[in-house]
Each structure stands twice: as structure tokens, then as C-alpha cells.
Image 1 (cartoon, one colour):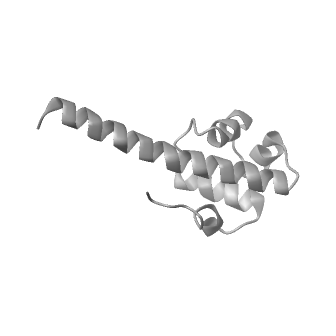
Image 2 (image 1 turned 135 degrees about the vertical axis):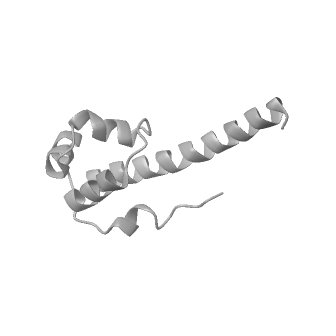
Length: 89
């Protein structure tokens, strides 16, 4: 396979990965603010570090399913709320 084609494919994949992280982080921030919680309060309720929540909201962390579950529980929502509006393209 051509190296240039591989690099372009990699960049497209990274852009898609960034999109889901950005959308997830925006949803966490939106729901946290709706609940009137600071990042620190959410982190405490989710048993996560406060800087981790900020990194998730800024799409700097590739969050695990276990952390997604902790955040959902802390926000008192179902997991599907995070992904209802996600578009693959």
C-alpha cells in the first residue's frame, strides 16, 4: 500500500475518533452544567480525578467504558443519553 494513502487514511480515522471524543465531552459538560455540578463535584461523585473530567470535556482523553459508566451514574442518567445524538459521519 502506498505510504501517502496510508497516512491519509490514518488522518481520516483520527479525525473521526476526535469527533466522537468531542461530542462525548460536550455532552458531559452540558449534562454536568444542567445538574449544577462543578467538574470537581462530578469527579467526586464519579470517583474520578477532577482533572480527568476536564480532559474528557475537552476531548483530550479517550475515555473507557468503565469511566463512562461512572460519569453516567454520577449524573444519574442512563448510558444511552451520551450516544443518542451521535452521528457516525
